[in-house]
Each structure stands twice: as C-alpha cells, then as structure tokens.
Amino acid sequence: MARPASADEALGLALLAHGLNRDLQRAARAAGGAGALWRMGPAAQARLLRVAEADVRAAATRDALAAARGRLEAAGVSLVAAGDVPERLRQVFDPPFGLFAEGDWARVAGALTERPVVAVVGTRRPTAAGRRFALGLAAELAARGAVIVSGLALGVDGAAHEGALEAGGDTVAVLGCGLDHDYPRAHRALRARLRERGAVISEYWCETAPAPWRFPARNRIVAGLAHATVVVEARGRSGALITADFALEAGRVALAVPGPPWADASQGCNELIRAGAGVCTGAQDVVDELPHAAWGDTQAEADAVAAPVGDRGVLYGLVRAEPMRIDQLAATARITPAATAAALASLEVDGLVLRGEGQRYWAVRRAT
Image 1: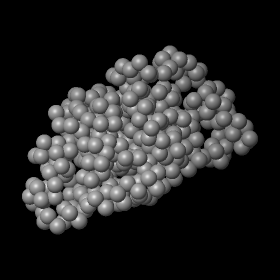
Image 2 (image 1 turned 90 degrees about the vertical axis):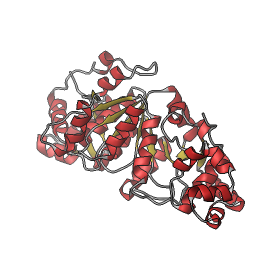
Image 3 (image 1 turned 30 degrees about the vertical axis):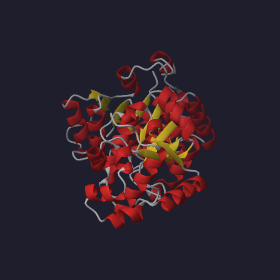
C-alpha cells in the first residue's frame, strides 16, 4: 500500500489540482500514490497529466506553498495529513490526499475515532415529513453519542446537521468546494454553528469553486468517515445514492428509510432496500445494525418517557403532524401563549421536541 501523503505533499497537490482545475486521483494511482505523484517533479507530472510543464510549475511553486501555509494559519484552518484521518477513511477507493478543516478539528477527530459515526444524507428537496424525520433521527443518534456526518447541502443534509446541533452533539460537514466558498449561502448561519460545535472539512484548496463533478467525489468522504450511512429520502437519481454505494463498496452499513412507492422522494430509498440495504424506521434500527461500545442510552431508557397528556399531549400531537411556531401552536390548540411556552419547555426537557430552524418546534422522539 502506498504511503499516505504528508501535509506538505497534500497541500502541494491541492494547489496543483486547483491550478489545473482537475482531479488528480487517477494520476496518483498511476504514479503509485499521492506522495509519489508529488515527488515526480513538474516535468514528469506534466507528462503524466498531459498538460504544459509551465502550467504545473505555475500552480504549485515553493513560494506558493509557503504563502498557502501562511494563509491557512491566518484563517485558522487546519491542514490534516492523510495519515491523521480516521483509518476507515483511508480505506475508501481514492482516499483524499489530505483535508482542510475549520472548527474544532482536534476534538472532533477524537470523536470520529472513539464514537459511532453515522452519515445522514438525502435529497435537497425533501418532503416536510422527510425533513422532520432526518432532524429527529440525527438528534436522537447524537444524543446517544453518535457523530453525525453529512454534506451541508440544502434539504436532508442541513436537517441532519441541525438535529445534531440541537441535541448538543458533534457533527461534521464535508464540502464539495474549498472552504473560502460560502456554499450554499442559505446555510451560512448553520455553518457558523458547525464551526463552534463541530467541523467543516474539504479536500479542495480553499479557493476551489463548487462544480457538479466535485459533489459526487465529496460523497466518498462522507461515506468513508462513517461507520453507517442512512439515506432518508432520495429520488431515482440522487447524490445520496452515490454515498450509499460508496458505503456498501467499503463494506459499511447502509440503511434507507422506506416510503410509499408512488412518492418520487422515496424511489431511491426503496431501490436501495430492494438491493439489500437495511431498513431504517428510527434511531434504534441504526443502533441495532451498528454495534459500538460508545452508544449511550439503551432503547428501554430512551423510551422511558410516557406519552404526554393534557396541554403537552395536544401540542405534541400537533408538532408530530407538522413543525410549527409557538404562536401557531397556541392559536391552533387554543391554549394561552404562556401555557403553550411552558408545555413546550417541558416537552423539550423530556427530549420529545426540539426548537429548530425558523423557531419551529419539531417532534424528535416517540413517546410510549
């Protein structure tokens, strides 16, 4: 097996890939590894890549590397060598040469090694129920000790990160572009929260722009970091299915949330299940499929909360049907705003609801 690239080699290759606007994984395989590709020097690299030697030399000079290291340090971005990523990520096909990380990478790296890691992915255009399920699933898994990994995309990805953060858990976002890019812009606030509680990572040099082909490549890192991948909703042709395929190819657990056969958002998940993926109807399915010593609460403990009654029961029933703001809940239930706020606070303490995006309350756990 080829030696993983050092931090300096990873930085040089990232600059080279950015300067040439191309993927270097195939070239690294031909050269015998990322480190070997870097050590070939500009002339040999140009021949292998079939580009002008002048373009190679312009992309990653010694001065450019020194400037890049200074820029990373000034921006508080960590450069993570391939040898310092979790072993399971190094086992995927075409592992990244290295990673750029913002946030508390040192702490998150420890969590990725010591705790169960679950990727929660899906369509950018989920149904309201699918989004609610993704948020609740991620919240309960995070509360039980899992690190949640996803791609920060709109839809299911964002809901997964949101759920993990609302539960006080750790979460990692993998970008399909460089860290300089505020993509997607709608998740600017969510990304800021991720930097405080988790990490945002990319294999691309910071200035690398989003491009369609980079997102499928990003998905191998999402799957590679995780012990298990859960697809919540996915249409017939979805990037989430690529993530699941990477997980299956690496011998990891893959699960899908089943849905009605007439629903477009369920087509990909139902296909995955027919192909042999596990069925996910809640957090316990993930725990059962992924034995790990660091899982928290047993299912009996997790289900110990009795079904709420009175005002709490009315409000819980409403948010199980549809996420709602406190003013909407008070009006619909015909309960005073003060009583509504008190009941929701009590439901939050019991872990039955969370206040998420748009100040709406979501049901995240089933009462018995």
